[in-house]
Structure formats: C-alpha cells, structure tokens
Length: 257
Length: 369
Ligand SMILES: Nc1ncnc2c1ncn2[C@@H]1O[C@H](COP(=O)(O)OP(=O)(O)O)[C@@H](O)[C@H]1O
Ligand SMILES: [Mg+2]
Image (cartoon, rainbow over all chains, first blue to last red; front, side):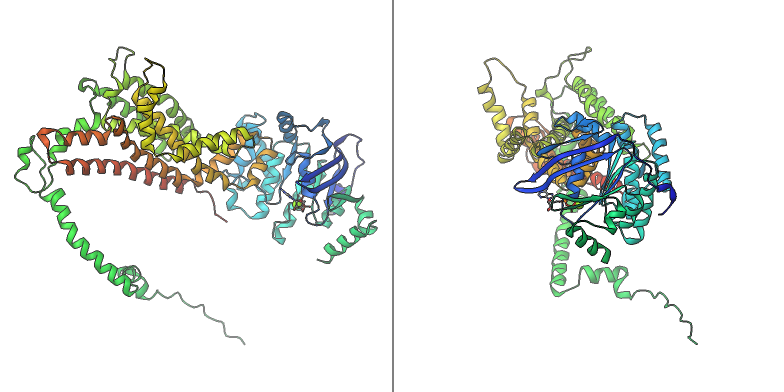
C-alpha cells in the first residue's frame, strides 16, 4: 500500500466539512462533547479510539443520521438544520459505508447500485446502469452484477457497498469501520479499494483501526475517547510521538494485537 | 514409506432408513404410542371412508330435474345443486343481464393471467397489478351496476351468490392491504398524533367482533344519519369488512416492519432517499415478503368471514345456499347444500394458500445467513 501516488498532495483551502462545538446527549448520557473539526476538500481523515468513544456517532452527525443538541455543522457550505429537503440534499453528496454493509438483500448488486441514482438523482435507468457497471469494475466485481448480496462474500459485499455509494457521485465519503466485520483474508481487498479512492482525491473520513491504512493514506489522524477529540496530528507524529497518556495506552493496546 | 490411503467408498445407507419401509418405521411405528395412534387412525379411516365415498359418489344421484329423481338412491342428491347452480353463482341477478358478470370475470382472468406467468418481467407485473387494482374495480362496478352506456341498472340488493362473495372478498382484500400498510407505518411513526390515531383505530376494530360491526352498520348507522339519506347496504358491509380486516392486516404488516434491521433504513437515508421512497423501495418489499403467510392467513379469514353478511340480509353464497335449502320444493337437502358451499370456500382458500407458498419460494433471494 506504499504506492507513491498516495503521497499527500498539498490541500486546497476549501473546507468541505466544519463541525463547531457539537454536543450530543442520549438521554442523560453526554455522548459527544464539544467536537470541533474542519475537513478540507480532498483531505483524508482517520478517526480511531476505543469502542464506545463516540466515533460512529460523530461521523453519523455529518449526514444527519444522528441529531445533535448543540453546535453547528456545515457540509459543502450548507448548514445542517431540521429541514428535511436540505438534509436529503446533503445526503446525496455524502456517501456512507457501514460496518455491516447494509446492502439491500431483496435487490441484485446492480439494482442496489442504480436505485438511488434513478430515484434520487432522476437519472435514466440505462445511463444509471452504465454508470454502475463502471463503478463495479472499479471495485473489481463487475461479474457479480446480477447476483444477490446474500450470494457474495463479506469482502465482496463491502466493495458493492462502496460502489453503491460512489454511484451517487458523492463529494465526501464516510466510512464507519468498513473492515471490522470482515474475515482477515478479505480486509485487504476492501482497503485496496479505499486506497484507490483516496488516490482519486476523494474527501474521506474513515473510522478504522487499520493503522497501516492510516499511515499510508491519512493526512490527519484523530483520536477520540469518551466523546471527546483527545488528539489530532499527522500520522507520523501521531504514531511516533503521541501527546496524551490515553493515546499512548490505546496505541499500545491495538499494536499488541 | 507411507502407504497411499484409499478413500473410503460411499456405502449405500442401511435399508432401515430408506424406501417405503424406512419411511413407515420413522413416521408411523417409531414408538408404542405411535403404533397405537397409527392403528387407531387406520381403524377410523376404515370405518369412515367407505361411507363417505358411497354417499358422495357411488350412491349419489347425478341426473334429473326434481327431487323425485333422488328417491331411488340413498346417497347425495346432487340434482339439488344442479338445479340451483345459477342461483348459487349469481343470486337474484337478472338472468338476462348475467352475461355482464361473465364478461367481468373473463376480463379479470385475462388481466390477471400475466401475473402468474413466470417469463413476464417484474416491472411489467407491478404496473399491471397496480392498474388492475385501480382500473378493474371501476370497470367491474359499471358492468355489475349498469345505469351507464345503456346498460340497465341492477340494484346491489340483487347481487348475490358467489358473485357477491367475491365482490366483498375482493374489495375487502384490495382495500384492507394498503390501508393496513398505512396503519402499520402510522403506528411506527415518530409523530405522536398520527401514532395515537393509528393505535386507537387498530385497537378499536380488533376489539369488536365482525358480526357486531356488520350489525351496527346496518341497524345503528341509519339512526345517526340525517333523515332521508340512504346509504347502500352493500357499501356499508364493504366498509365494515374493510376497516375490520385492515386492523388485523396492520398488525401483520407491523410484525414484518419490526423484522427489518435499522441498518436498512439508515442505508436508504444515507443515499438520500426520503421517507416514502425508502419505505416503498426498501422496507416494505422486504417486510411484506416476510409476512406473506400472515397476509394470506388474513385474506383467508376475510374470505370466509364474508359469509357473516347474511346477518344483515345480503345474499352471498352462504345465504343463497341456505335460502335454497328452505325452498318448499327442495326441503331436506341442506347437507348437499352446505357440502357444496364448503367445497367452494375450500377451493378458493386452498388456492390462495398454494399461491402464497409458490410466491414465497419465487421471492426467495440468496442464502439466509
Ligand atoms: N441509540 C443509542 N441510545 C443510547 N446510547 C447509545 C445509542 N447509540 C450509541 N450509544 C452509546 O453512545 C456511545 C458511543 O457510541 P458509538 O458512537 O457507537 O461508539 P463507537 O463507534 O466509538 O464505538 C456508546 O457508549 C454507546 O453505548
Ligand atoms: Mg462504531
């Protein structure tokens, strides 16, 4: 995964995502505490931290799968509000890949991919199918187009899920532990797909514990614990010179496994 | 040097687990209790079957036009059914106009046939099914009722027999399913007003017997309506049956909705699909497929419950048969009448059951994990 093309190009100053003082509570439980994060166009961010620290909740706020009670989030110069139409508009431009793939089991791989372009972007079916086949080729499974998700391996399903998101031609991709439900031999095929995506300049936020991926691809690594951003730094600094005690503890735990 | 090991050959299974003898040992004679039960069942069949066959077939009367023709034989008098057959099918629908009913049935068969043909592509089936659901009832209504295009008017009180049973069942099913889906979605809605409304509706209609609903719709409703306002009796029965079954349908559908993982709705939302699109394209197709057995169960119950409309004086198949058994020329043949009615009900219900099994098999996609 050390191809030179993943070398980090200088970033443009256009910010794609801004989170300012975001707080969220589940009942009385304070799950996100003052999250501040700005992501530039084409920037790639890896978020890590112990289980239950609020990583999923934080990135799910960006496409409003979760509501938050304080603070503001601006995505592609549109500020999130309760306006359903606005939320749907933002979601069109923000792809999301889930830990458990969440493919639609009653539809074939191709139908999974063309559903949103046809029904949300109003693309003609023929064009949507051509588009989808291109993306299925990019994730290297065009031959599975007519199969149902239940007939594919986990790694293949996750690659279909990535292709499905890409078919909406998103400006931002969010990944929530995309490889942690996979058997070890399938992790690489999914990571390779994500590296290729990074090479194309996609803006990405990726929750993952794949530190190899973070080292090669990320511009910035963010460490979260109990709902807070504890530390953020370039991967080099983050791994060789962690600032906080909690980060050191976390790194020693995952590097031991 | 290691001797190369020959693979163990596949041996035939022992005779005790295959063949008819093996089947019988496993299913009929596996324990002393099972042996006793098998013997008892065999004895009962031995006693009952010959009588049954004699009555329905060998000693039955098949030809003739009057009850006198049946005197000679000890078995069933199927002449009774033959003589009243038209009445059982159409009720008191004017004989000269019955061709209209036949045309409507023919149209339905022609229109629905492509739905049962495997090679017809699914999108075509969906469009055809939806247009059948919307257009066909209007066409059928005009044909049955008349009063338009020079067709003589036939009052709904003259519709009867199997025709009326099918009208009530068909309208009930076609209306109860969509209404039930909406109620189920409403019951899971995040909006408290809609949720309360749906819960109240469902719990009210599930809490009262259908017979009460029908009775109230025919006896009590007119008391609340303004003087002179006449509300068709059949229409009232249709509304009663529909609302009643929709409440049951809602609970069946809700069971399916609950089985769909939250991740499906989240994935749909993350792609930018709104509430109605994600329900119609993602959630409902999966949820309805899961509860096909429950839906068909409700349909079958609805079909049989249509016979309760005799309480408000509508002449459906059941009431028409009952009416014929009280015909002074044909007293004493109620057994034949009710056996015939039961056979017709059974035929329809069994077909629905088989079709649903077939549908489940065809809609199954991939391995379940
Ligand atoms: N729907 C919910 N209701 C209440 N608590 C929740 C809910 N979802 C998540 N949590 C809690 O919020 C915390 C953060 O969850 P999450 O963002 O999924 O963590 P992570 O992705 O970092 O493992 C956890 O302690 C979890 O138990
Ligand atoms: Mg998580």
